[in-house]
Image 1 (cartoon, rainbow, N blue to C red):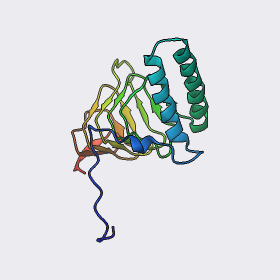
Image 2 (image 1 turned 60 degrees about the vertical axis):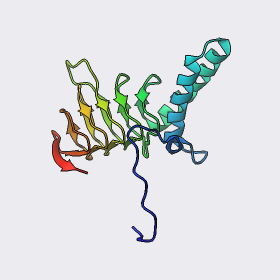
Image 3 (image 1 turned 90 degrees about the horizontal axis):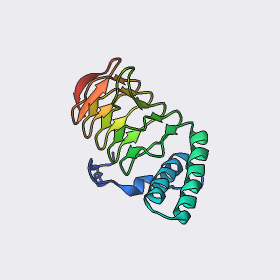
Image 4 (image 1 turned 120 degrees about the vertical axis):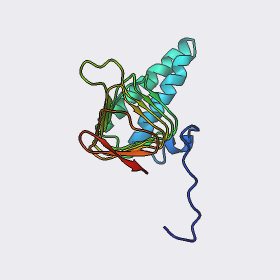
Length: 174
């Protein structure tokens, strides 16, 4: 880091940074996938035939970007604002999972339930999830936590902790 450059402000775990989701160019699959989810959810909240038609348009766009990215993220997902999917290929998010604002999710991540488990994970705000990580079952991931690449998280991860390995173990704070 250049000592003359100003430090980056800390990323909030509660206030979404919506600018992170804004498509930056024509071909920006991850941001357009997230945009289609957001637009569908807004259109679905409103009543009337026009909004039903608009929601169908966003369903079509969601399906298109889902095929392009090979991601499986439900239109009804509870994903906080400012989420980033730099490489969205192969991301699978259970429809009942809750993801806090400003989280970072890399490729091939699975957020889902375990066999026989009823509840999906609850992920706090500004959580970084490394490539290939699996977060399974009724676990809670605290704010500002980091999940290492290929980690398999089966137990709760406290706030600001780093979890790595199979099964994941807590290393300490970020």
